[in-house]
Length: 216
Image 1 (cartoon, one colour):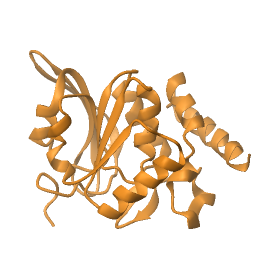
Image 2 (image 1 turned 90 degrees about the vertical axis):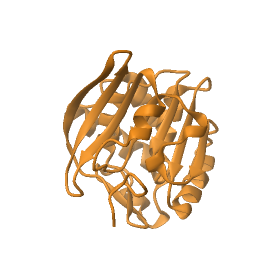
Image 3 (image 1 turned 135 degrees about the horizontal axis):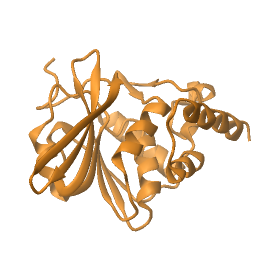
């Protein structure tokens, strides 16, 4: 009950920032409990509107950022979604709720510990329509392509070519692009005639690792 009260307060806060216009996303936020996706020693901070460390130099994203990205993604029931960067699994769980039992979410994570952490968290939340793969997410996940939607939860120096190739015509991708300190959130529509692109604000994500990520 304590967490439900905190979650309701968080949802109202996100609305006050001008996000969360979708009833479906609000329902997903109420159903998918963020405290199930953070390390046990910081569960009391789960419903603060801030990113939280999940170890290995990675974070669970700020809730208002998750909402902004999810709204821009325009997920529908039955969609096949690819998430780059599983983290703790919270974003994937929200997407899984939105695609419903007729859809599926594939999520790829380069850090093996976090892939296992996400898997355990999804089991705890009883999410069954997410498939986690451990690997280089900067390459996308060609095995299950093409995707109706792609969401990238790490900063990219530029848009990796595999992501565009693996997105369906008519599909949408949401991806933060910039330097390691600040990125613009790009919303990309892939059309028969080419790409339509817009930005929806400035954000800060951990850097994408792998072949098409930032070089260490």
